[in-house]
Image (cartoon, rainbow, N blue to C red; front, side, top):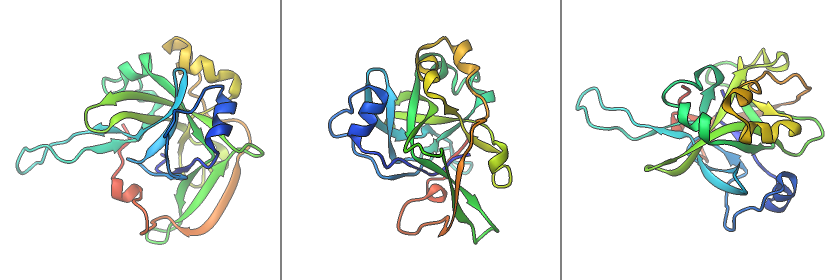
Amino acid sequence: MCNLYRMTSGNAEIANLFGQPVVSGANFPAEVYPGYSGLVVEGDSVRTMSWGFPLVLKSKKTGAPLKPKPVNNTREDKLHTAFWRDSFAKRRCLIPVTAWAEAEGAKGRMTRTWYSLPEQDVFAVAGVWRRTTEWGDAYSMIMVDGCEMMGDVHDRMPTILAREDWSRWTDGPPEEAFTLCQVWEGPLAVDRTPEPWFNASARTASDARPTLL
């Protein structure tokens, strides 16, 4: 599952790539964690949303609602379940990504390994979105089985969409869109860094307590 990704391209570049204007004031960090604002291509614009659908659980002790947890990843085999069904049928989107990170190494000493597409500054990942009372508009990434190049690090990865499939994902019928939830067969650029997975200077995936459904 993906709990950290980069989006470092500028608004003008994204608008040119996706053929849609970026909404004025669409601010987002270069590194996006669950609960952060990220850039999303939806309808006829490119705008920011909160990464992760809110999941509200209740305290086992008091029965009172707990702070919502961001469900930032969506398994492709769960898209037809109640939590995701309406969004998948009616509100599919594209998520611009420069690279995504996975934790690699022994527990307590994990480092960040980044994956991207060779010679591409940005690519599109399949997503769904919906309006929420907790965080406004929110989105989630569609996850499929990990490809061979990342099999030694994680068994799941984002659904990367080829450019010719972008409109099929956003505008096609759900049955056609579902066929695009495939393991990426192209090459990946892999960057194994010494950077610790947990970054105390930023709210990380561990802080946000992300969930995958």
